[in-house]
Structures are given as structure tokens and as C-alpha cells.
Length: 454
Ligand code: SF4
Ligand code: SF4
Image 1 (tube, rainbow, N blue to C red):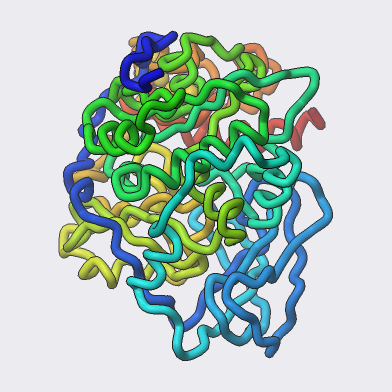
Image 2: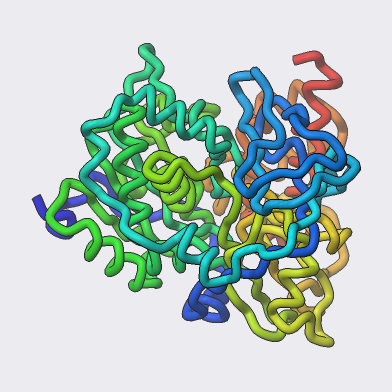
């Protein structure tokens, strides 16, 4: 059955949300460039949702590239590997853009590290057979994924082996591979799909084998046609369906993509699993192929470095643990207009306070915003216009939740489902009163369990 000829169960459209200028043209046509290994990589012991890892190495140990340097017995966690051969330095503490202070292992890179071409060929190049998944034991696939330290590379960094492990109470029929990059500016997933579509599809097949899904859909944005063409070309006459989704923020959110592609509605507070679906990101899929077919851990990732404040926007393939500063330098540095550098994207990302902080498994982009981009109007009182309600993709009432968070009224926050907020920022984007709605949601969600014990 041809992928292109299959009708979608969903409409392909995104309900609610907003339509900011995508600015993806800045970097969409920039082929992925591998960055040479930095003098030192710094590897935080938590790069995932779940239990922290414990160091397996100590200062002055020598390590080979791909060696596991931290792990834990906890199920919801993911081991950490060094992308470079070198010498372990004294452990330190790093502060990530999201404000977390984390113990980290620095590894000083040994001489003779592979050059950019070799890194690109190792991570993205070569053949990725699409037809070997059926012969594999799902348990073996899960084990390889776990040992490779794979986490979701779309942002949440949830351990992939946990997400894919079958749950007898919630059987899965469909795997959705998400190539829609919500955030404006970011094109890392797009370039991956264009340059290594077979890796994405091979990983999709293996992921489906692991979780028991029979149908595979790959979702891409409808305004960047190169990804669709490359994926359909690589899929050939298979049962993998490549679907285009309307470009409307936050089209890459799990709930939004599942609805748009599959026509299934995930209940408030629920997961894709509740409607028989597992969602993984395209970069995660490619990393699954590399882990299972080649036995390679997650040590590198593509990061888009872009924005009006960067001289030469690029998509870089970087060693995890590389400082943000090295990424900016590789793109010619900041322009005089640069006012703020954000990890992630402008809608959900975090301002980078320390450019020596390292790229982690979940880093998808670095955006240098200009003074014009970040100009803010003064906050005023809510005018009860209702615009935040109109755009919230989860049908929440942001003005009420923000009020509850501000007054620490957790009963009210619960009644209005504050915990379900995905912090997409649509409400703040349209608010004429410039209320800090997302900050209030984040603060409320962080404080509510502590203050209520719930
Ligand atoms: S309330 Fe949360 S989910 Fe709704 S628009 Fe605001 S940030 Fe997004
Ligand atoms: S958009 Fe802003 S001003 Fe309008 S109702 Fe929501 S919080 Fe109030």
C-alpha cells in the first residue's frame, strides 16, 4: 500500500493555537554541519525526566568515545555516555537554562578526535535497513534503546524505553513519529528528515516493533515540503504513512498532532497511550535506529542555531556536553542587535544565563532574539477579553488559572485543571494586557504539589 495514497483518519488541522511568523526560512536550507568536538564536554547527570544517574567514572579516568559514564538502576531514567575519548575531570555543578543546578562530569577531549565529516558519517550517514525490525525480539530492541540512553528529543526528554514498553492495560495500535517542530525558527527535525529519512523510518519500524504498534504515521509540517518528499521517497511502497499537518502553533504538541493526524482526542490530563498511540520525535526515531542497528549510544544531536541576532544561522550536529558558546561561535557570533539568547524556542524556551552551560539530550535549538523581538509592553490588569481562552489548545481558561496561581488558590487551580497546561505560551502571545501567563502557570505547577502535598 502506498504511503502517499492513504487517507488520513484526522483532518490534518490544528484546533485553536496561534500563528506566529515561523521564521524557519532563516535556517531551513542550511545543511547540517558537524561541529568539531570542543576541548571539554560537560555531561550533567540528569538529562531526562526521571531519576538522576550516578557517576561510574572518577577524576583522571581515561574513557573511550561512547563509554557509559553514568547510570542508575531506576527504571525511569537513562544512562549517559561520553561523545569523546578523553580524561575525566573533577565533577562540578552546572546551571542549565531552565535554572536547574546539576552535578556534571567534565571530560577533557583527547587529541585525534574525529573530524566533522567522520562525525556526520557516523551519526547520520550510511545505510539504514527498513526491513530488519520484524525479525527482532521486542525485548532486545527495548534493551538496546535503554542501554543507549535514549530520551525523547522533542523537548520533554522522557526515557524512550519507558515510553515504548508495552502496558497490557493500554494496548497500542499506532506509532506516531512527530516531525512537526512547534517552535518558530527551529529546523533541526526538518533537516534530519531531509538528510537522513531512512534513519527516521528504520527507527520508526523498530519503535513500532518494541511497543506493539501495527500502523506507523510520520507527521511533518505542511509548509516545508522537503521533509515530506524525502520521507515518502525513503518509505517507498510501505505501510508507513507520511502526513502533513497544518502549520499552526503548537502543531507539534502530542495532543494536537494525535488529533490532527489520527482524529483521536486525548482526554484532559491523559496521554496518547489512553487512545492507543505512542508518539516519538523524528530525532528519537533516528537515534533508535542507530542504537539498535549499530549499537551506538546517544552522544550527538542536531541543534538549530538561528534568529535575527545570529550572524549565520545553521543546523549543527554537536556532541552532547558542548558549551552553548561554541555553537554561537560556529555561527559567526551574535549581531549587535542581539538582546537575548534562548535555549529551545521563543515560545517555550528559557533564556540562557550562562553560555558555558552545556547542550543536553533535550536541546533542540538556540535562538538569538533581537531587541525588536523582545520588546515588551507594560503589564496591565486583565481586561477580560477572552482571547486567551479562544487560543488555548487544551480548552483551558488561562486567565482563571493565572489568577489562582497568583493567589496560590490551589483548589481553584485544580478546578481549572492547571496541571494540564502544556506551557505552550499561546495565551501570553495574544494577551493585550501583557500578563505573564506562562510564568504564572509554571510557578503554580511547581508550587502546587509542595504546598498541598498532592
Ligand atoms: S493555559 Fe497553558 S496550554 Fe493553555 S494556552 Fe496558556 S500556556 Fe498554553
Ligand atoms: S487575554 Fe489577557 S486580558 Fe484577555 S482575558 Fe486573557 S488574561 Fe485577561
